Amino acid sequence: MNTLRQAAQEYLTMRRSLGYKLQEAGKRLLDFVTFMEQRRASYITQSLALAWAKQPLDVQPSEWACRLTCVRSFARHRSATESAYADSSRRVVTVSAQACATLHVLVRTDQRVAARRSEASR
Image (tube, rainbow, N blue to C red; front, side, top):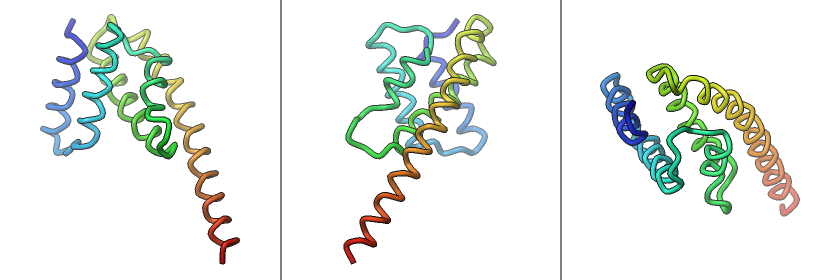
């Protein structure tokens, strides 16, 4: 079984060979791998994925959603290529989908609040 970093590099190479640029997503994914290595985690868990995705705290929730989407795609790929990884990854993908939906609602709410404030200040 590959290390998480090796798997991430292979994933990015494969996706880029298909024509995806993945400039920001690639940086995010490697940042996530560093986060996982600092915690000595070999498997992506829902709690680690969400903890990483919600960093930093002072950005819009849409940034959190982008970060989580990056992890979801990689986790889905990892579960398809590593049989030992499939069970734990499936839970991450499912929970992350729910978290993305929640983050989307937060983003839409923030946008509505900003629009109302803008209208009120006129």
